[in-house]
Length: 127
Image 1 (cartoon, rainbow, N blue to C red):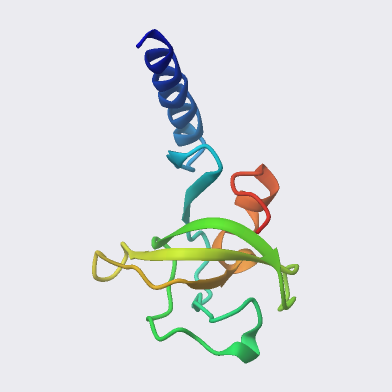
Image 2 (image 1 turned 45 degrees about the vertical axis):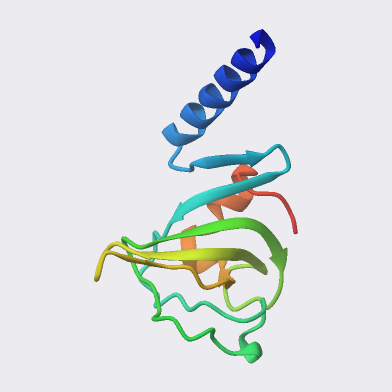
């Protein structure tokens, strides 16, 4: 019982520390970290089927400043003007417009999400 309490306390401290930086980590298991990443650009962020624009979009509305994504990892793909980092996106939060959350898996271009800040901070692992 004692070890469970210590582990839980450590997880709470980790989540609290990461929340201060604007990224929230959920602890479903030790290896599955996800991050809430706020969209900090207003470029019309699309969610794609793969980390390549030729793969097409998944069918959800484009996102903009004030919205957010939940991502679990990053990978390399097309460089469309700000590097080749793409976030594997699990859900989309449309805070700025409708306030709804959609759970459509896809890929978002890191430079258009947050200028690749979550990637540089190590907030999510490589896929």
